[in-house]
Amino acid sequence: MSFNRKIVSSNFVDYVKVQLESGNGGKGSVHLHREKFITKGGPDGGDGGRGGHIIVRGCDHQWTLHHLKFKRHFRAGHGEHGSKSRSTGADGLDVYIDVPLGSVVRNTDTNEILFEITKNNEEVILCEGGKGGLGNWHFRSSTNQTPRYAQPGLPMEEKYVTIELKILADVGLVGFPNAGKSTLLSVVTAAKPKIADYEFTTLKPNLGIVEYRDYQSFVMADIPGIIEGAAEGKGLGHYFLRHIERNSILLFLIPADTDDIKKQYDILLDELRRYNPEMLDKERLIAISKSDMLDDELKAEMTILLDGELPVDFIFISSVAQSGLVQLKDSLWNMLNP
Image 1 (cartoon, one colour):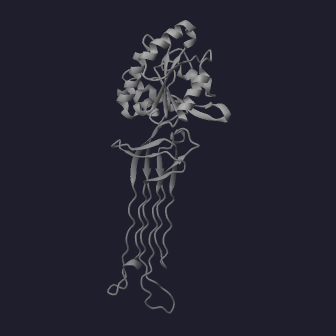
Image 2: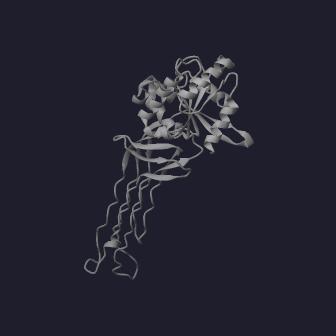
Image 3: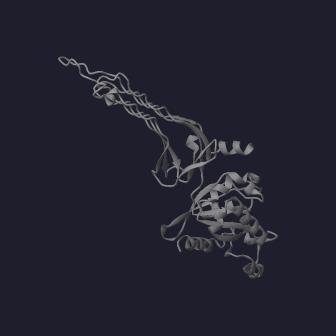
């Protein structure tokens, strides 16, 4: 419960529930034409206007769902009724909900995924407005030349949906709490995540842009620490693991003073597999952090040992001493641009 309070109190909001109501369709008009010198003008009732839609639109300027934090109800305008002279009523006002790229919209009641927004200006109608009713002009016939009835408009739709944000980043940092993920992000990017010497310092994802050679760059995401059992929700795992799903590369951060680097890597990989087996298809790289504690002789011994144990490439880095960071950037860039 305390986690929800902390997430809501910050500017980074990645989970909101909203109530949506589209507009009613306007009624068709029952009207008979009246004009000087025309004794039997016949029906001329117009159609009702369409009710307003609720439309979700992708926006690449949004990074969070913070703008939806306090507005939980969206109501579109109702369609106007038809009128004489076959005049169609005005359509109801559409309501647009701008969301960041990477947002997933679910039905709150069934938890079913309705759609995902991944492109800028991509629009999806979430709640359709009611169709306007037909005026009595449509119901004229040779046997019924003055119909005195028309269609009512179709009613609105009401939905309760949950909008989740899955961060779109090139590189996602994966590791146990206090592994040095936020420190690395603060050194290689201009981001200013909270850094402290205790576990779960990071309670919300942080994004940073890594500057590379020739004015090129890529996006790195610092995900809160994963612990054993995260796939079952332990340690707030369900809130964080979804942010890793959209990353192109997984950078595993394991401290150099860990008792068993291979075992820690296997635990992290197993949590990702249990949460979503498709995550194992992503490219992976291991960064052994806090390596400023190791001398060259110990590094050489560990390299020989780890070469035979680890199935993926690894790099020794130190965010504090800023060693190995250029090699890390080169490796990540080459993986992103093979």
